[in-house]
Length: 272
Image (cartoon, rainbow, N blue to C red; front, side, top):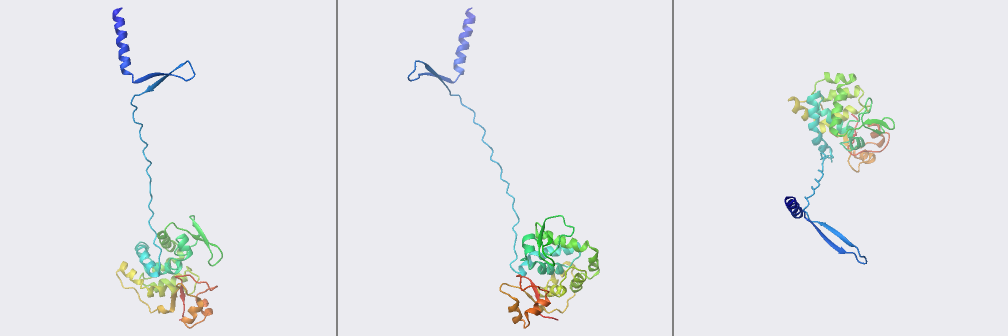
């Protein structure tokens, strides 16, 4: 019996020492009842801090908008040369087409759709943009990046039978390439070859071909002064006075149906 009592006393002692709860009593005002308040003073483990969510920042390659034709060439010449190595299309031709079709990167299709070559939808299933061209609101391909426009240009020429004659030409003969593009139906502008050749001569784009092939390009005698690249402030009237011609003649030479001009656009100003 004594042993049992002793065990009960020890148990109560251990229990009172192990508990950190404090009990106090206070009388509730206006009442005869006593309220028992229990305060838990045990040290609570620190609650785990919320791990801050990792913010993923996707850096977009900054786009460099050409400020001039020279700037356009500096940006896209390496891409044109790579396409030449892969697909056998002269870099000079690709660059000249890009300058001409995109108005040196300032045309609507280039700015809003990264389409530098005026390639229409055809069998295209990707994003698209609608733009007035030969007809009202024609469908044109839209790209996420201008470099894809350059690649699609290469695939467009190499993948269609009507352009196969191009690849039978000397890769350094940009004059023949320019003429065959028009003959194969790439552009409706009858002065398209002259515009390409003039751009190649004016900006010495044939040098980019020479770097790739290691050969001297077949040079032709083309007067760069026969063309004019539109800058801010140019009008058909001012150009007609500058080149001693008429507005009507300028429109005829360039197949223009209105007097609207785009900065970077290439105009034929003299008839050969």
